[in-house]
Structures are given as C-alpha cells and as structure tokens.
Length: 533
Image (cartoon, rainbow, N blue to C red; front, top):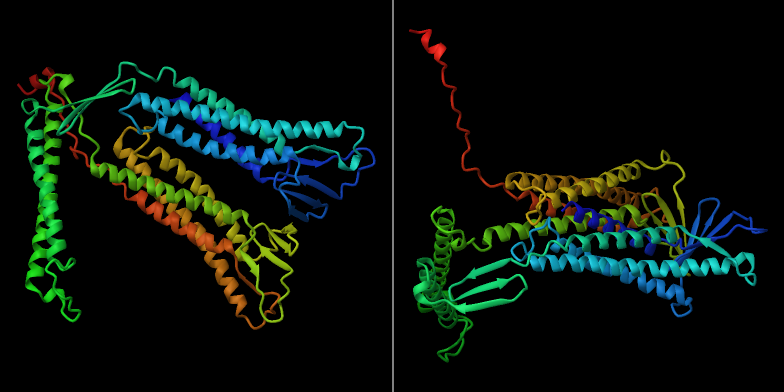
C-alpha cells in the first residue's frame, strides 16, 4: 500500500506541474547576449500569450490573436499539454478506485487491480504527452539560438516552464511505473465470490466470468422463502396503490365526467377514500419490503456468527442502505468542500476584487481597472493587460491586508481539511477503527467550516467597503468601484465550504456495545489471608 501511495503522490505532483506549465507564459525568454544587454525589458513567451516585464515591475501581456498563425510546435504543445491534463484526471480517478487504500470494488479484487493498473498506464501516457511538447520546444529554442542566420534580438533561452515540464513528465512516468509494478502481485487467481438472491445464485470467478443458476425451492433458506413471498406481495401492493391513487384520486378522468373547475377534489368523498386507500397500499408495500430485507439481514448475521456453521456456508450482508447513504453524503460533502477550496484559490490569485465603475461622465471604456489582493491591472480595449504588484504592504488599506491574511489561512486550512477528509473517508482504509474514522471526518468538516468563515469575512468586508465608497458623495466617479467577480466567487466558495463541512460533520461514530469497561480486582495472596487467622 505504501508503494502505491508513493506512486500516486509522485504522479499527482507531476499533474500539478503540467497545469503550471500550461498556465505560465515562461516557455521562452529573452537571451541577453552580445549587444543585446538591455535588461529594462524581459520578454516571455508561452503557449497562450506573450508578456513584457519592465524593470519597474509592470507586466504587459497579450494573448495570441490567431491560432493558425502560430508555429507548429506551439500548436502541438497546446494540444498535447491539454490532453496530458485531461488524461491525468482520468488516471487519478482510476487510481483512486483501484487503490488498495480505498473500498471501491473490495469484493472484486481482479476488477480493482485492473482499474489500478489502467490508472498507472494512463499516467505513463500523460507523462509522454507532457515530455513531447516540452522537448520539441526546447529543441527549437536551442536550434534557433545556434542558428547563425537569426539575429540576436530574436534568440531566446529556455524558460522555467521547460525545466518544470521535464520534471513533471518524469514524475508522471515514475509514478505510473511504480503503480504498474505494484499491481502484479495484487491479482489473485483463486478468488471466488458467491452471490445469493431470491431467484438466482451466481458464482464470480477471478477471471471475471460469472455463472448463474436458478434457485430451487428445497435449497432455499427460510429468509429467502419469506423474501420471495413478501417481495411479490410488496410489488403487487405498490402497483395497486399507485393505480388506485392515480385513477380514483382525480388525476385521471376515467368516468368520462365533464371537469368542473369550481368543484374541489377534496370535497369529493370517493376521491378522498381512493387517495387514502392508495397511500395505505403503498405504505404496506414499503413495510413488507423492509420486513423481508431485515429478516434476511438478521438471518445472515446469525449464521455468520454461529461457530458450528462451516466457513464455506457463511455469507456477508449486502451493502446496507444506511451505510451507502452515509458514504454518499460524506463523498458529496468532500466534493463540495474541494470545489469551495479551489474557489478560494481563484479569488486569492485573480485581481478582480474591485472593477472600474462606469457612471456619470466616466464612460471611457477603453481602459478597465481591476484591483486584487496582490496587484492591480489595467486592461486596454485592444486586449493588452498591464499589471503592477503593490509596492508596500503597510500602505495598503486595512481590509486588503486582512483579506490577504485570511484568504491564505483559508487555503492552508482547506489543504488540511482535504487531507483529513481523505483519511477519514469511509471509502478509504487509512484508519481501520470506525469510531476514529468518523472523528477524523468530523474534524475535517470543522476545518472546512473554519476555512469557509475565513473566506466569507474578507469578501464581505471588501464588499461593504466598495458599497460604502460608491455611495459616498465625497468620492469622485473615477474613484468609485464596483463589485468584482472574485467577490461573487468568494461567496459561492464560502457557501460550498460551509455546506461540505456540515455534511462531513454529520458522520456520527457508531455506538460501542460496552460503554463501561469491566474491571476485576486482584486476588489476595496467601500471606495476606494468613495474617487474619
């Protein structure tokens, strides 16, 4: 299991590196050689845009206008890097389902091994898709650098994304190889599963083949015999209840009477009786179904605990509905919290907390000013963007300083919440004690709620400041701002963190059978007994 976890971690780090090289425009940078020693401007080129950074810290970026006008290596890099990211997502899903630390397909070990092995192979494919465009771009940069026909102003050097891409591709290949190597001994050819139902008995071989035969009445146990009868009666009762409620309750006009809109159906005694009878039959159907399932579960548990019964005749109870609902609720809470966590990362990075307000005479839309936690940007109507990082931390307003700290704390808390949620999840095997597992899940929910509060406070504070300044008569129209997209994303992220944390906190630990420990007193020694003689 530890080797698998190491392989998954390496592959995920490579996946994050692939996302990094896809977003950063640092594949190629200016080469300062010969007479080209002007360091006042640094040119960066990526797969989506190119940027110019001034010595003053200003950055001006422009997205590529035409895809077809790009060189072939850049077009291929776009496609392959995006394909690598998509393939890595599929590999992560396959590896999580097929990992030994998860409870998916725990009764079908061969299927679990096949899924995990497929995840490792897909990681290898993702690593190859990452290495090819990075190596191709590096070859073009090196070839152009030593080409005597190209002048010095067009020569470039290898950017940081090239080195990150090589490392990410290597990690994906290593992680995929480690995962593939751990599933060789995981397949057990002697595995055998037997499923008993009301009408069929199925045998599942380790090769994946399944053979079923019809259950004969003499070989059925009492619970299965009663389950047959009760299930048939339940189906008939439910069908009759549905039809009585549908036909006699006024939904369908089976009698051919003219509809009277002024007559209320509740005033008709026959329709009321039909609805009551239909509801009673449906309720009876539910009770019969519950009785049959509970009877079978009790009978299976008693046989399983009987020491006189052979091990080959013992069976396990199928997935319990309450356990499935609890697991689904826990997974839903973790997914919602993770989406809120990614939203908090987005609002921390995007400079769209405040946007220029076009009111009054301020109708010049050729420039749009965005303000964020770390920088402010000016976007021209031509598509060019110029950003500048804040020079002084102490010169920032209080709401911005607090927003920085609280958002970073929320992201860190979200990381710990995700780790605790994975460890305490019911679909993982990191913690074997169910009570301790539930406590870890509850702790994860509490951490997510704290993270949501840390996101909600700066977002509301900044929104209050923007609204207060907007209606302040002292402020000019050029100084007024409107609510940016990051504030709405922040509210949504905080709500998802609260909702996900609440669902995780609803994981109640099971009750212990013995709440009190039995204590025995030590027997008195012979010497002590003689002392009283």
